[in-house]
Amino acid sequence: MNFSFYIAKRYLFTKSKNKAINYITLLASIGIVVGTAALFIVLSGFAGLKAFSLEFTNLTDPDLKIVPKQSKTFTFSQQQKEKMAAMKGVISFSEIVEDKVLMRCEDKFLAVSLKGVDRQYPAQTIDSILSYGDWMQPDLPHVVSGWGVSNTLGFNTYDITKTLRLYAPKPGKGQLMSVKDAFRNMKVVNVGLFQINDALNNSRVFTTIENAKYLLGFSNEAVTAIEITTSEAFKQSQMISQLEALFDNQVEVKNRIQLNAALYKMLNTEQMAVYLIFTLILAIALFNILGSIVMMILDKKKDLQTLFSLGASKKAVQTIFFAQGFLMSFFGGLMGIFLGVSVIFLQQQFEMVLITPTLAYPVLLSWSNVGIAFFTILVLGTIASLLASWQIKKLEFIN
Image (cartoon, rainbow, N blue to C red; front, side, top):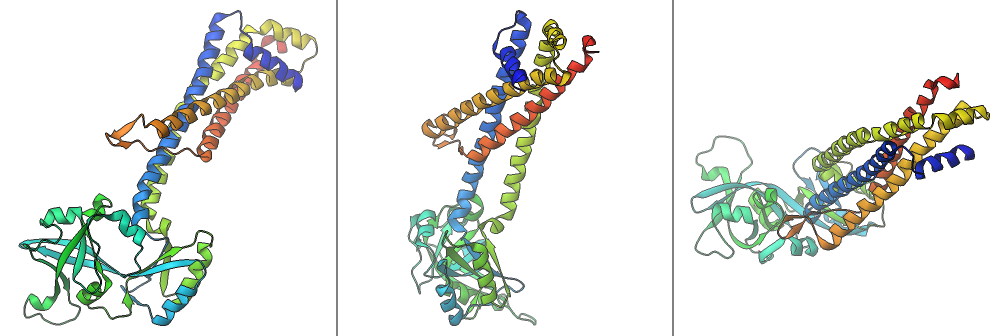
């Protein structure tokens, strides 16, 4: 084996008398370096986009969220609140009442998602999303709207010239005598505007949980969800079991990934598709290794005949050219990773590629992507080297 690798290194790092073989070997090496760098850069770019997209969900989504399994609401008693507050790993929790309502400004109407939050709603979240005006004050008919909702209905903060009302259908049965009997309504004042993403900006309105319960006709202990901030040091799986037991398994506890299952699935599917496409392109490029080694075999016929005459086995000679291809893939992969890491580092430091004049293309430098790119090039290079080394069998003098 040492004998085979020694000759393989000589063949790889020593120029051949045949210039065509030197050019083919050089092109194969460049292809490996560029292909590995391209695969790593694409994976890092997509990882950056994924992290950038998920940042918006982190602004509003809690670590854990308790929702009812069947009905729209569930009861959250004072005793349950005390037990939850005493649980290990629970930093804080916030009661939520959320439902679809109708918002009216003068003669304009818009269906919005009303989210009632209590006083324990995380201040960090409020500071991150509130872009203009103030947050709601307790015991007052205040709302904080998304910029899209404000633009659609045409109101601003503390706009006393326009009347804002929220409408929610009343529960019940029987024939209605008038439209007024069908809805609860509440006059509100918009005190702030938030900015999260287009979907929420155009549809969500925050208010206090007291206002939401009054408008929707809920009891004092009724909630539609509980949002929990947890300690990173505590296992969520253990906490989820405790929370479900606290509510007699009548609720479902979801983590952040489960709350955004569709988004995670879409991003992971797109990342896999991009990886497979670039791997296919890289596999085609690695056929240069096969061509380079086959040309080397034909060029070294006399040397190989001498080796066979000295007693070298067919397997040992095959190992020479397999090792040559493997070393070419290994060192080319290392150089490609170095080149790719350099490009990603420069993008992070100097923001060379921009999406908008103020937003740089997001990239993420991670060891997992280094491993994936390097492992991929080694596997493909090994396959190409095996295919090339098998060409030894076709040489006439072996028989």
